[in-house]
Image (tube, rainbow, N blue to C red; front, side):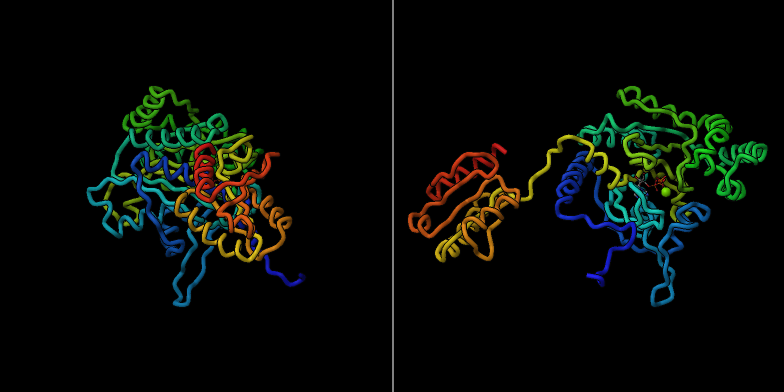
Length: 426
Ligand code: ATP
Ligand code: MG
C-alpha cells in the first residue's frame, strides 16, 4: 500500500456515512429557498482570473494569496472560483438578466481557496450562495436575514448563532472615513502587525478585520465608520433594524465588521457562532450595488450572502438528534435458487408499490446467517426473508432487526400492506 494516491490537502471526501447529513441539510435549504420564491442558477467552477481580480479586489486575502490560478492550454489565465458572487453576476450581466428585472437566485457548490487547512477552513469547501438583484432595499436586505433566521430554526440551531450587522456606507463616505482611519493607525503604528502595516497602504479598512488577538485593542479604539455615514446610508440601516425589531429578530451592531471582500456597500452582516472555535462565521453577506458597474453592467442593486456548508454541518453535528433519513429501510435475504430469482421479481414489485421504500437486495448468495449479518450492517429496520419454501407457498418472512421481535410469515400481498404501514409509522 506504499504507493497509494491521497486526496489533495484541504480537499475532503464526503463518505457514504456522512452524506445523509449533507442531504438532509441540502433538502431543508432547497425547500426553504423555494418557499421564499428563489430560483437556482448553476454556474461554471472555472472563470477568467480577471473576473475575480476586478470584483473581489486586488488587495484582498483571496486575490493576493488564496486563488488557484493556472494557465490553460490556450495560455488564458483561469481561476477555480474562490466564491460565487462574481460568477453569478457575470452570468446575469452576460445573459441580460439585469435589464429592468428583479431576481432572487441561489447556487450551491464547491469553492477553492489556498488557505492553511484547519477545522472549518478548507481548500475546497461548499457554499450556498444567495443573490438578489434589482431591489434597492432595505426590505430585501431584511428578507435575506429572515430567510436565514428561519433556516437556523428549521435545523434546530437557532440558539447557536448570532446576527451581527454593520453598514459600510457609500464609497464617498468610506473615503472620508478611510483618511481618518489611516491617521489613527499611523498614530499607533507601533501596535500594527506586518499584515496591517501592508494594508495601511493598500486597504486600511481590512485592518479592522484582523484575526490577530494582539491587534484587538488598537482596533477596538479605532474610529467607527458608523459615525461617518450620511442620512441616506443611516436611513437605510435604521430601516433594516426597524424591520428586525418589528419581527423580533435580535442582532448586534458590530462596527468592526468590514468583510473580507471589497465590493460591499451599506449593509453587511454575519451570522456567527461560538461553537466552532476561531472559524466562527457561518454565513456572511451584504449589499454590493456598485459591483455591477465594476463588472460592466448598468447601475443596479444587489444584495446577497454565502454560507459555508462545512461550518453548518459542524454545527448540526453538535446536536443530540437529527431527523435524518436512513439509507436503507429494508434488506432482502434470499436463500435458494428459486428464492434468488423470485426475490428480484418481488423486489421490483415492492419498488413499484412503494417508491419511497429504501430496499436493498442481498447479492452474491450466502447462508441465512451471513445474509442476516449483512442485513444488520446495512442499518435496515426490517429484513424480508425469502427461502425456496416461502416462494413455493407465495409467502415471505418479515423480521424486525432493531428489536427482539421474532420473524412472522405473511402472504406476499399482506407483506406489501405491512411495509406500507411501516413507511407511514416511520
Ligand atoms: P473567514 O473570515 O472565515 O476567512 P471569509 O470572510 O473569507 O471568511 P466569505 O468569503 O465571506 O468568508 O465566505 C462566506 C462563508 O464561507 C464563510 O462565512 C464561511 O462559512 C465559508 N468559508 C469561507 N472560506 C472558507 C474555507 N476556506 N473553508 C470553509 N468554509 C469557508
Ligand atoms: Mg477568508
